[in-house]
Length: 94
Image (cartoon, rainbow, N blue to C red; front, side, top):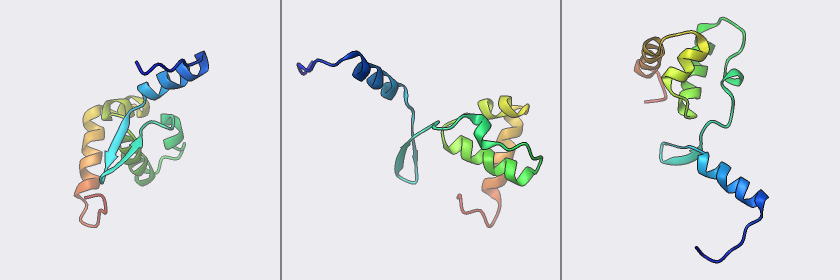
């Protein structure tokens, strides 16, 4: 080690940092999963808003399976939604 003594609080913070997932998108690194899945999805049934929230949750590090389970959809259904959003001609996400 480097000879530095850390108190319990500092060790706890380091443990939390070690558990964080980093997402790289467009050459930008950021910590993933800073929000709970509930916060992505409103109670509305609007599919466009839901699909946008699905993309955001996946870009923030959640898996298609995790998003699908939260919404009561299969991973396959989530995959199809993601593909449809990315295949839209005017999509800025390509």
